[in-house]
Length: 114
Image 1 (cartoon, one colour):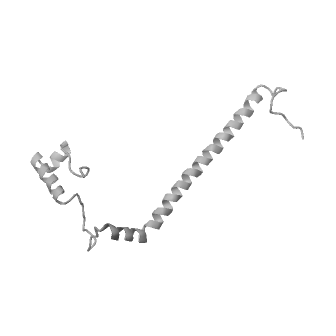
Image 2 (cartoon, one colour):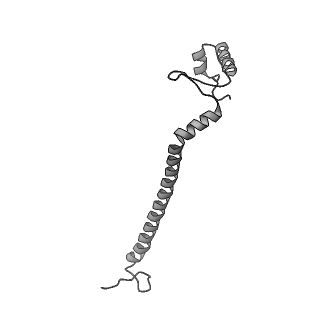
Image 3 (tube, one colour):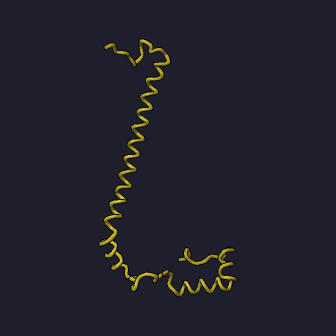
């Protein structure tokens, strides 16, 4: 995966001090099998996908599922609110045009005297 490898831009050349240092870093990352592991705060690093998936399902899956569904519901509610707002504005404009014409007799808008 070339995405995480340092590129040959000016910043990378400055960080690795030469093109040779840059090539050495790329080779080091290839030997490391494109894996970045930091062991700052835990004793054991688990790299087996099955165990990672089981741990994820037991811990964060429910929260992630709830938040993704909540996000979809909010998007749908925002869309419905926008449709209702546009329908309101449409109705107001359709009333305003006959009002500017002093409500002609053949108009669909009519006053009802109580």
